[in-house]
Image (tube, rainbow, N blue to C red; front, side, top):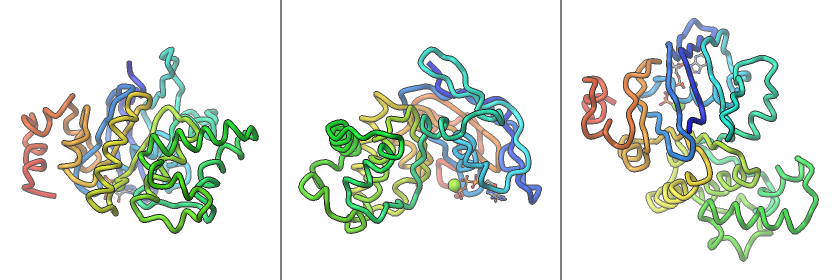
Length: 256
Ligand SMILES: Nc1ncnc2c1ncn2[C@@H]1O[C@H](COP(=O)(O)OP(=O)(O)OP(=O)(O)O)[C@@H](O)[C@H]1O
Ligand SMILES: [Mg+2]
């Protein structure tokens, strides 16, 4: 089943920079889709389109189609100006490269979004705290210090807390833009392991920080170069037998 259907998507920034050019792809539900390629290829731009963060940037023109499908495959037109952006972002959550924890306790970081959404039931809030921390592979490390400040956590723990904070709100999709770029190898391994668990219940789109991470995590991978989708293939095939010379040069490290 598909989660997103994207057709002929073009994004033009106000400086005339065309950062996506006629991109078409279908993103399946309950799997990890990796968007990779050199700097400036349009990976972050595509993620931002999917939850309308582009509304906050300098975009002058978006054309083409971007649909989000629910379990009944009922499409939501993401680009329609009438689409409720708050509701869209509740379904499609973003986790950024640099974790931004709130200056509150670990527990409050997790319950803040739910409280804002109107949840007051104490047992349900507690249940969400534990579930989301378990899903983000952080529970064991913090369960005895939930009332201590989140800023005292390590960088890797803060990144998993940000992931848990998104999960507490039970979105359908998690967008991750280089979520482990500032992390040590052990924390990176933990985040990657939790993504493998999470894909059973969520659709995950990941911009990895390296080709190696792309190859480790991808259920399907899309290679972007200067705003164009060069190649999109299931499994790890793009890393083993790339079909396009440019993909091959990139995965073999001939340019970066
Ligand atoms: N706010 C903006 N205003 C103007 N141009 C932008 C803006 N954001 C991105 N761009 C341009 O759009 C193109 C794609 O950028 P994008 O950030 O999507 O690439 P990326 O693949 O995520 O790169 P990186 O690997 O460096 O994160 C680049 O040429 C970039 O300069
Ligand atoms: Mg980027």
